[in-house]
Length: 103
Image (cartoon, rainbow, N blue to C red; front, top):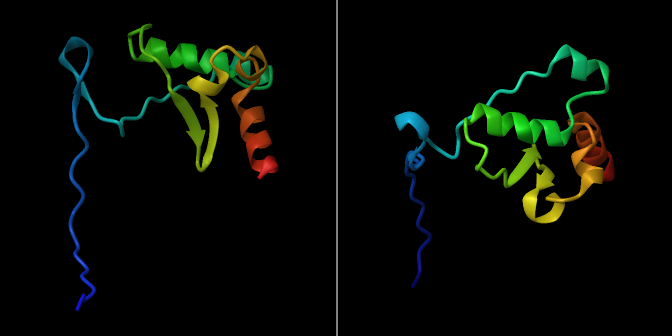
């Protein structure tokens, strides 16, 4: 006879990955990119520029941005949009608006 079993456990900490200059990172690390006033006036930072800024902040042009999401919406996935200039040249705000309205 099977009885229901409920167990409560604390989550384990995220695995640390060694990075540049002896720094360690986890999958939950955050990179903050501030939009310039110039790009804000032009409708917002484009996805292409955001990816460039992420690589610059990480101090490694060889890193690969695998996806960018906004809440439950995936705005970019390298396996879907890697060479799609139409998506890469849109502003992030425009991509977020399209994702929200399409649901």
